[in-house]
Image (cartoon, rainbow, N blue to C red; front, side):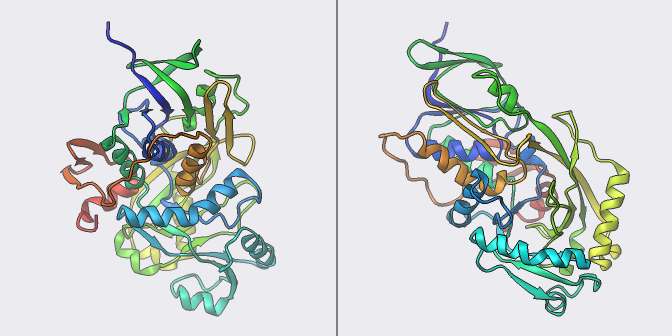
Length: 408
């Protein structure tokens, strides 16, 4: 009988947050293992997002989400540049289409300034249409928000996890954590579908399964309420119609439906915000997609001249509160990062830094090589890095990536 492997940290969940955490903690000299229940990393909530990295201009002040998004503004671009990860700073325009929405712009501007987005400002209808000449002229005005990015939402977490693996992290796919208990001697014994694992610390960043995983340590203080977002993607022939991310005036419940360019040249409309009970396999519904396409045609009338080439749906792990659930149980060696709804990609590097700072270590840090690993395409939807194959799990990347290998 082989010995049970022992780690400093076991990370449950291989989405954007889990990949960022394994990168950060491995870089701090900790022996780490990442357990992902699916056959691929970045396969659930992180495989159905927009690919937009937000500034947090509208985040609720003093929340953990706000603090992480604020920290991420500098950290994100530093890492993207260091690893040569594709991103474009497009900025956003929060557009008012009626007088009621116009009346809300000053308070939204004040919130943006209070949240540290000092460059945000109101612009007139004429200025708006000069910046976006293909926008529907029914627009009345807008708030301009610099710093909003479009990125490759798959390559960022994959690169982070792969670099950690190169430095000794164990990445275990098809590894579902089934249960566990804290042993005498302050190590967790986790039972997984690939056998037992021992770890001094466990980090729960299981996304849509977060409350279920939390029950291994304690009755979960939060409940996951999956929220579906559907998207429609236009052909790259429409790329010239739009430069900025077009935001609606948000509601109490959701940021609303966006029209935005992807980093690889498609124009995208979405997401919706539909509560459901199922935690897997979100379905696209033709009626909803037709409504999204109609909205996109309203915002950019000339989009009607260009075909929709793909649709997709993703799930966000909403909870009963709007903020992240960051729980540090020092006595039991358990850290929880849950309820990361729509800003996981935006904040993942700062979340990872926050987790790492809560776990002080005297071990020597690792300096990661700056270049991104060399990538070789081995199939339409699969690439290989250092002999490890990765499936392109995100629909936006499957559309743009094969034609952009030179850019990567």
